[in-house]
Image 1 (cartoon, one colour):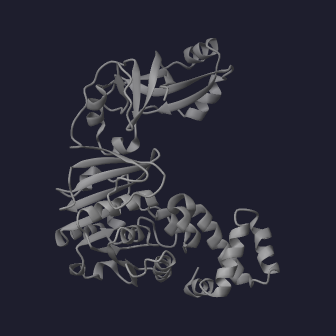
Image 2 (cartoon, rainbow, N blue to C red):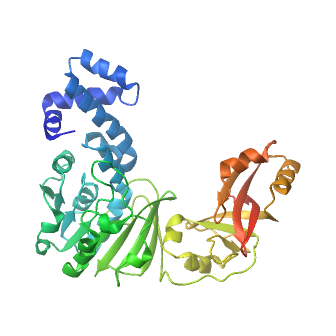
Image 3 (tube, helix red, strand yellow):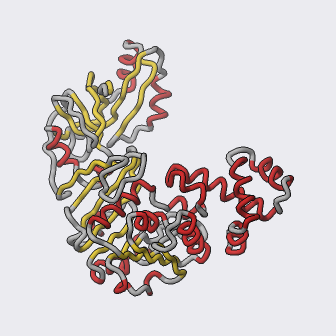
Length: 406
């Protein structure tokens, strides 16, 4: 996609091509292209429209119905914040009194649009001309052009004194190749600029990769890890006056967007703490809990253990064990029926004796490959079980479990 193609798609003829492409997207691409050309759509316009239609179809899971009118790039879609997460962040900014916001590296505008929906005036900066133009087009498409404007330029040159708060989502993929960048110093804008924002702007939020090293978290910042339906999707650093706690794990569900209070729509559960506490280590007990990845990455396993009256069986493995079942949004619970030192022969014999033909396999601290183990077990029968591959006091162990009802 280039600027000329984007301009063509925004003409009446382009809109008609996009509508036609939406009807055939998701099927055979050659047949879809042939149908558009047969309808009189020029080949170049047909290709651009079909590419957008396919991206919009994929984007529906992130952005909901609004995806049908957005302009997208594949890298931009992959890196864009899910709507439920962006709306929650915007609601928190609005609740903190933010009225003007700079989005430095705004991409396609997912976070900026969420902030604008919350009533915040957003100034977006994007280095790539096509992406900047798409972000502006997306603002127009959803009727937020008065609240979200975009300039194409260098995010590091933006005058942050113009706004009350800054949001920055540095690019973590290499330009041209799309490869992930794991070294924060190679981000764009660079990490020293990103962390320096907190010293220049009293309220700063930085979106970072969920694998961020805790040692890189600026002093005094709140680090939040966010999961959606059990999928760890991002981390964010809340700096200055926005920092409320040292560590936070936020678990969201897909669903309708939240309102300005952050309380309506799809619920988000939050667990907070210091990130430095350590859980007690003890024996395997009647129930095992597998914490949500946001809880694990936020180093809040000890806080969850306190809520569940649970302990670890190995200080380096984030499975929690308790004597009683406790309903919690922060972990999945299983009832433990058997605890075995790992032995393929013994495990296979026990599952065969119980006519177990279906297993789910969970693992932490085990080098075993679940699919290879599944083949090696040679299962047969109608019963089902959950296998937890782990370590107990350093020893390879398998737990045979049943999911808790409800």
